[in-house]
Length: 132
Image: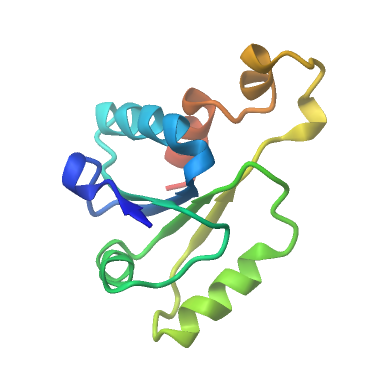
């Protein structure tokens, strides 16, 4: 796990977790959110599962909201995340899962697919800010 809190991506509004595959996207998203006065602790994971390290647990206790950015369909991940958090004594933490809206995708070109699927930094930022 890579913590971006030491690089200025930190704050009490939320804890944002994604995988390393979304690293460039999460950096752009963090900058856009900070420009809107929304400051979040950001972590990039080396795998899909979440290991609750001391730093991550501390972040969740402080921010009281988890935002999971995933580049695949979330299916039933929210109940699984909630159960995992509860196993670590973190109860009643709101979870927001952000994934691409694949049903809106009409192109095969990478440079347009993120925007169409609302999985670019600007679209994700809007989704986060409208669901505070």
